[in-house]
Length: 318
Image (cartoon, rainbow, N blue to C red):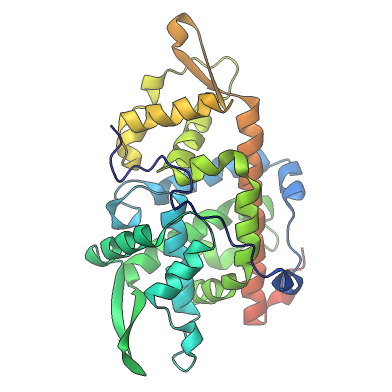
């Protein structure tokens, strides 16, 4: 049976993403394209690094609040950090309140207000978020990421930029790789301008939305792929994935359910005696490569936004 912490329902909130402010797109800097990234001869190596680095931050015991990762929770964490970075005590519109967090997360379409309430409460209980009074209005409580959350966020940030640094080492992506707290703050504040583009990117990958919203589904399938799961000669059995359950804090039944959905959607086939062998299909490879390239393109965009905010965009003209 799937536990309450193991979500299998796609877009569990029932919400649809906000279309966003199209006018903002005109202010975004030029950045690496999906096609450019996919065509890079080192993309397979970058993909492997993407999987390895993200697996580290989504592992049980590492992902905040001692819960499994899904896009609703990951988005909530990122927005908590972004709102805190953009906070100006003199500007009420920037105050990082719980309601403002809910409004921002709701635009992505992956978490209901109730789910956000529960997750934020859990973050508070486990030392990742603190609630502080607003000095200008003591009736208002503000969300503040603790150093524990900020430290995790620096690792998560580095996981996004390590593959880009492999693909484009000159001039590279040094600050996130160094886990630079000053860059982290600037990057988080600047990334708010890219939210519309990120929402559009996420929902353009409709084939994999389920695997983004189901707990740890994406990283489990990516880990399976890196085990050789797409090799036509693969002889991997479902039981060979059992070690992923404790690693990502889910049950073996949950993994079985993920594989069943992947098969229903043409991402996985079974073969051999009693259909014992499982293999990811070319359709899966195409869909997930596209998603990874999309993610890297958006990371490149937020990096350039951060450089622009620092007045250092001339350093990156590639």
